[in-house]
Structure formats: structure tokens, C-alpha cells
Length: 493
Image (cartoon, rainbow, N blue to C red; front, side, top):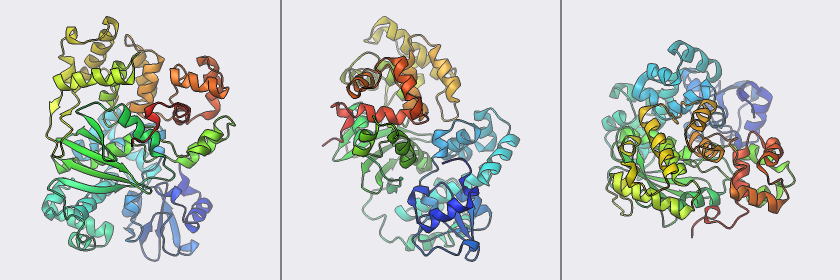
């Protein structure tokens, strides 16, 4: 795939005519005769080619006067893989918009986080996406509103506020314009969906591009779960979430064609952010066919890919939390790292109430950890220095791991910290920053897998061999790890 696929008309036509779900989210089909826009896999009979035009985003379709198809629901497509595999301005802006920054801080706030002027943003985003930051955020608000309308019994005025609209009238007008239905009509088309759920609990489906292999994804999250913050229960991964307006608890359950998501939020304004962070943690916007096709070209990796295609990179809902846990995990076992993290949670985490029991705290914030007495940390002096330097940087803002961070600059800043070597920096780049090309040639599990497969096992030689796997080396790591019997590689029973 390449940037700007919507400009390749012949390719788009082939995708629509074959109803290829792989391209959902890459582009959108707008039908000139009906003024409706669809995802490529829409089940209806494709319109005549002369009646189709293609747009790079749902926001661009809406801005051009098209409304969402009621059959294929294009607004609920998986997100474009572009934004998680690129680190340029547009990609970083899209990640921040998905995280609700425009709704909370406006376009000036978005620009300030990225270090650009609003004028530059409003020039570059429409050039690539056909819509500016306000239109993109509006499209996202419309989708959030639809989820709340269809899955909760909340009054419409409360939904308007929770979805980020400044006025009920704007909410009503937007819903009618985007979906060609009033809010009450939308709710009537989904009868009973909110029944049986206590207040504040939302149940929704998180779509993904097939195939998705849940084994290493949920296996990793469950095997490394910090007691009190995370747990595996009844086939679901559950964890607490620190969110802009409050906190939440999420349960994520793998299904054959979606991830079932049950959210409990202290403030419904956090719905968009919570969904975005869960999708990011589970790497649901990846394009597994593109990844696997490239890795399969290596005869050593091909059998691993063929055996269990669709592996994702397990990521995180909180970049600062993951960086702290990476330091706690330096040169110790998975069990020891969990123990260290659990002690911090008990002593310094923020208590929360879990209606289902089992989860007790939010992971401590950088500010809380920066106030910890180093002498109370049960770890070697050198790692204690690494820990205190990291949390001071996170709390003071000199270390930024947020969605707006530049991957290359962040790597350099992390490497400059005491106790940060290539393994720690690369695992943070892979799982916190989301770099799909992060690689761990010094990791013991990777070196052991390389020896067993006949690959070079020294870091320099393995890195040279892995050049053919770029830009998907983080996914190659998952396939190499999967050759081992470690619990991270297996879906818990």
C-alpha cells in the first residue's frame, strides 16, 4: 500500500468490485447518484464505475455532501493503517485527533503539541485527507454519538455533551447530515441494545482487518499483567484506564470477526479516547496481509507466518506506564517485573472501584512516581537511578512519549538517559511509541529463536539479515518470539 491510494482509480474500482474488506479504512467510495458513501466491502451491488469517486477519509466524504451508508456503516471502519506506520506530521496529527485532542484543546492545541502553526496543519491535512482538523474531529464526534445513541439509554442532550458537541442543535444537525437519520431514528433502528447494562457501561464491537491471531496479543498482555491494574478473567483481558476526564475499566474479548469491548467510564466524554487507546493497544488498525506478505518472502519466516498469520504487536494504553514497566523489567524475569510493578501500584497508585472486583488501582502517574523516595525501591542502585531519572523526565516534560512525539528524536533522548541501552529503547519504541519497524536484536528470546532457525544470532549480523523485513521488523519479532513456549505466546485458558 502507499499513501494516497484513493487517487489510484483502477485499484479502488477493483477493491470495490471484489468487496475486499482489507481496504476498509484505506479509502471511501462516494456514489454520485445516491449521494451516499460506503466502505469498499459494502454488501450492496456496486454502482457503475462512472458514478463512483473516491475519498481518503470519511470526513472528506461528509464535507463533500455525502451521507453514510446505512448498510455497511463506513464510519465504523477500521482506521487507516497509515497513521500507525508513519511518523510524519499528518500521521502524528491523526493519532492525536483520534485521541480527542481537538475536542479538548482545539486546533491551536493540536498545533502546539506538534510544534507547527495552525496554518501549516490546515494546509497539510486537507492536501492529504481532503479535510482539515475540525472536519476530521467532527466526523469522529458523529461516530461517537452514534455509538452512544445505539448502546445506551442516555438522554440525547447527555449524549451530545459526551460526544463532544457544544450544543444539542449542532449534535442534531450533524447526526442528520452524516447518517440521514435523526438521533431518535438511529436509536429506534437498534432496539434493545442498551438493555441489561448498568449505567455507565457500554458494549461495542471493535473491528479489525483479518486475519487476526489473538494468541500472542492477549497472551502477552495477560502474562505480563500487573495485579490490581490488569487481569485475565473469563476469556477477557481487563484493565483500568487513566483518561482525560476521569478513569475507566475495559474488558476486551477476542471474537472471530471483532473484539468485544465492554467499557465502564466515570465520564462518558472519555469514550472516544478509550476506544482509540484500546484499538492502539491491540494494534487493530494494522494491515496484516501487507505485513505477512513481506515477511513470508523470507524462507525462514514463511513457515512461521503460514502457521499462524495475522500476529499483531501488543502495545499499550499509557506510554509513560509502559516505559516505567520496561525499566522495572530490565534483566529480571516476567514474574519479578510484575512483582516490582505491583508494589508500586499498591503504594502509589490511585484507588478505583471495580464493580466486578479484581481491579483496584490506576497505575501511578509520573508525578506520583517522581515523589517516591528512591530508598524504598527494592532494586539495584543503578536501576534505581534509571528509574528516578526516567520518571523525573516524564513528570517534567523533558521526556515525551505521547502520540505527538517524533520517534527518532525520542529514541535519541531515551538513549541519553542513564541505564537506557538499545533493548530498553527498542522495546519502548515498539510497544509505547508504536514504531512498526522497531527491532530487538539483543533480546535473549530473539537470539535463541534465531539460532534455532538458522538465522545469524549476533546482534549485528541479525540486524543486517532483518533489513529485508523492513518496515515490519516489530512484527517479525512477534513471529520469532512465538517459537518459544513462554506464556506470552499463548491465549490463556
